[in-house]
Amino acid sequence: MCGIVGYIGREEAVGIIVEGLRKLEYRGYDSAGVSIIKDGKTDIRRAVGKLANLDKALRDKPIFGNTGIGHTRWATHGRPSEQNAHPHEVDGVSIVHNGILENYMELKHRLQAQGRKFKSETDTEIMSHLVASHIAEGRNLIEAVRASLKEIRGAFAFLIQHEKEPNKIVTAKTASPMVVGVGKGEMFVASDIPALLGHTRDFIILEDGQMAVLTADGVELSDFDGNALPVKTKHVDWSPVMAEKAGHKHFMHKEIHEQPTAIADTIRGRVLMEDASVHLDGVNLGDVKKLRRLIITACGTSFHAGMVGKFMIEKLARLGVDCDLASEFRYRDPVLDEETGVLAISQSGETADTLAAIKLAKSQGATVFAVCNVLESSIARECATSGGVMYTHAGPEIGVASTKAFTTQLVALYLLAIYLGRARGVLDKGAAQKCLEDLREIPSKIERVLATEASIIAIARRYAQARDFLFLGRGPNFPIALEGALKLKEISYIHAEGYSAGEMKHGPIALIDDKMPVVGIATEGPVYDKTVANLEEVRARNGKLIILATEGDSKIAAIADDVIVVPRTDPLLDPIITTIPLQLLAYHIADINGTDVDQPRNLAKSVTVE
Ligand code: F6R
Image (cartoon, rainbow, N blue to C red):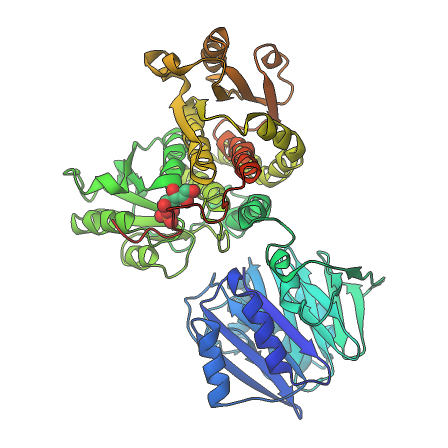
């Protein structure tokens, strides 16, 4: 989720680039840099931290020129540092990159064997070396980029320039965004439209597998093999505020829709299908056969992810898991030892209660590791000296209500469960392969749920004025009932409770009357019949039933007032799918009621107080 901007024309490039990067800072900012070509020479300035630090570096030592590329970084490979900041320059070739190169280790070894020296810990520098090495073989910049693209695997959007060909910028992309802004006698390029709206409203949106060569006077578009493609320009009339949200009304809505991509990013580079193995770079749990117990600790939505993780890890790795609210953990006297693993889950990496729980567990000899979204956050740093960190790679989450961070946590936990299952000899190759195949289908299944948004809006309209809601689920969907209720109450201020469907008869059933909407998760799985029986009890007391059901379920309509259909998947992965309609329902009810969806009252994105 880095921000990228490039310029070629007759103006000074650096001001235009830095101004564009400022509009993209919401994509992440742990470091930033620019590379400018003037008189056949490259000049680079980079700085750690926010863009203000790059501004200062540029004020102290200005650079000039009409061609340049810039980057604001959200680190994936390599900690935030000046050396790891982009652009990465090798022999006059400068590159900025958004994405993750999957085969970077093997390429790095090959290039090192050829005598090439690396200055950073990034995967991006590989591409700079590849392009430079092909230029050294006698190719021009465009040919060198094409040859390099054939060698890399993964997600990427690059800007590439070479000081010996200063009249062009080359861009290529797959799975990460890139747009070209069309000017008169100048061309712009960026990872996102908002960066360029001050200069143009005409854009060429690059598709996966496309490469563009920009000069001051035009753009040539081709596929990676060099076959020319027609250039289609799109006129965009968004306001700058709309543009930052990519046309969505709220960041939360944008982030709900980003989930297929975010989940693909969490999986990317961690799975080897051939031997059904999962690679948890950055995590070291020692001999996992010796682990006797795992404690998952977290707060709020991340705690709900942990509750689903318990189902996954117990089933796939046969390791006993306890879930502990981080805000309670320290106030007991938890039993911890070297055979207990402790897993902290946190989007922000800054939650004070979770941090305190980690410190306590470490002090008692437990191996503590984290699932976290923010590189170099306090929790990530604390765990780096114990069991390490598994990053979710969801990109910055701006809406206070967690959405894509939650589903990527679920995916990380599923990968962890497979990893533990394989390492502990519980899961054989065939079973693990089946799990991984099911997982790979999740992004497209989420796309299908998102496509039903109109019907969820209709349901939201019918129930937006209700004063209370009940959410019911069983098995791995019980935590999703809790999460559905949390999403609704935090952004719409409507009272909502999540309950295990089986617990209804032990008290909450007294609340049911014809004014109480009850959202029941009754997807296929081992607890389907039991859940339906619980929902029948609601029906018998005139409760209004909104039921999430698996496609093809012909029975459910008979008891439901409204049905939300979701695609079929393995029961352990089902919570990733069933979460999506509940996020949309909460979002649309809040939007209809006109609350401040992205910044609900009394809440903060990082809870740094205990
Ligand atoms: C709810 C939400 C919160 C957080 C909780 C923990 O939508 O976002 O409940 O999940 O404050 O935050 P992290 O995951 O940053 O530790």
